[in-house]
Length: 308
Image (cartoon, rainbow, N blue to C red; front, side):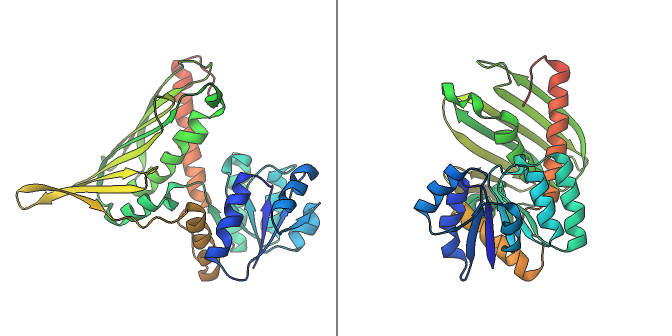
C-alpha cells in the first residue's frame, strides 16, 4: 500500500516512526507547500517528496492529513473522488462543511475515512471499553498546566472536543439538554469551560476543560449501574471498583500500552483490508463538532467572551 502524508510536521514524524512496526510493505511519500519543510524532512527521513498534489495523488492509495497544505479541503475532496482512503490526524484543518461533504462522498465511494483525533486509541480507554455498559454518569477533567505560552491552546478544540467524541460513543443516546459555563482568568478568551450533557436515557456527563491548571491532568470516571471505572489517559492506567458479595472491591486493571499512532494505523489498515468501519469515524468528528457548537452558543449567550 502507498501512503501519502499531507504536510511535514511532528505528527508526520510520529506516524512515520510508528509505521514500520505495524505494517509490512508500506511505501511512504509526502507533499508539502513549503520547500524548506520538505528539504528538512527529506534530510531526516528516507521518503519521496512531491511538489504538487496532482502527481502526489496519482501515486498514493491513502492519505494521512497531518498539517496544512494550500487548500486542504480541496485536496481531500479530490482524493476521495479518486477513491483514496483518508486518515484525519488533525480534523481542525477541515471545515465543518467539508467534513459533511466527505461523509457523503465516502459512503458513495465505499472508502475508509478514519478520525485519528480520538481517545479511543489510548491504551487505557481501549482496555476500559470492554467494561463499559449501562452508563449512568461520567465525570471528565482535561486540564493543562498554565504557562504564558499556552494561550495558543484552544480550550474547545484542543481539550473539550476530544472528550465529547468518546463520551457520545459510550452513552449511545440522544442529548436532551446542554448547559455550559466559561471563565477567563488571564486571556481574553475562556481559560476554563464546564459543560453538562443530559441524555434521553438518563445519563449525565460533566465535562471540565482548563488551560490554567497547576498540573496536566486527563482523567475520567465512568459510573456504570454496578461498577465504576477510573481512567488516567496520561498515565495510561485503569482502575475499577465493583460490588463483590457485601463488599466494594477495588482492582488495578492491566493495560497493555501501545503507542497511539500504532493503534491508529493498525485500525486504519485493518479497516481498509476488512472493508469495515474504523473505531472512530468521520461521523464521530461531525457529531462532536455539532455538540461543541451548541456549547459555544450557550457560553456566548451568557458572556461576551470570544470563544475559539
